[in-house]
Image 1 (cartoon, chains in turn purple, orange):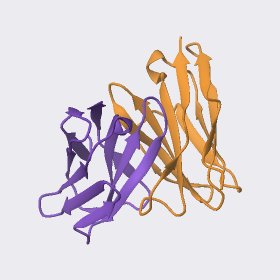
Image 2 (cartoon, chains in turn cyan, purple):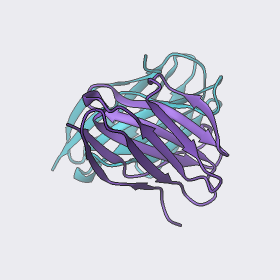
Image 3 (spheres, helix red, strand yellow):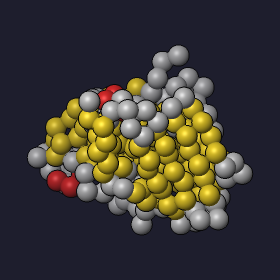
Length: 112
Length: 113
């Protein structure tokens, strides 16, 4: 079964709007990461947030982590057509230093 | 610094054949992970290698195997191919493992006919 589950599965917004994606997981983690994948290509790392951190920013990206609720959110502000992609959360569990598990992903479409 | 290189980019095989995929990690990275991506199952963890040792393995049959060489390059092998093995196979490298960000290659698209 998946360790992480993203919500929503698909999201369609207008350029300039903000996009929020959520991720829930089941077991205690060392860190949670967000990745982006453009159609049929490799994944690109966006942000890594550790279990003792609550929020991280990178450019137009903001990630929050709530370990009590076992959830994370990725906010993309002022979206652009180039942000159209699939977004995945990935978790490294406390019991494992060698395995990163990916959720099913959120497909984001930004309409110009 | 060169990124993660996967070869070949595309591969077409028939059922029953075997296939070997190659992954060259970023220089200095000792951890290499392999994932299978399909529309129905998403990204599934296959295995992870560190300094030539397999440290973890996902829930795949024994037909899926891999290895890592002393220069950290890795190969994965799938024997007796089945139609369901058609997928994008992604390799990712990192310095030490799961506590750091992963750098992905562009993947090998395998089609089994």
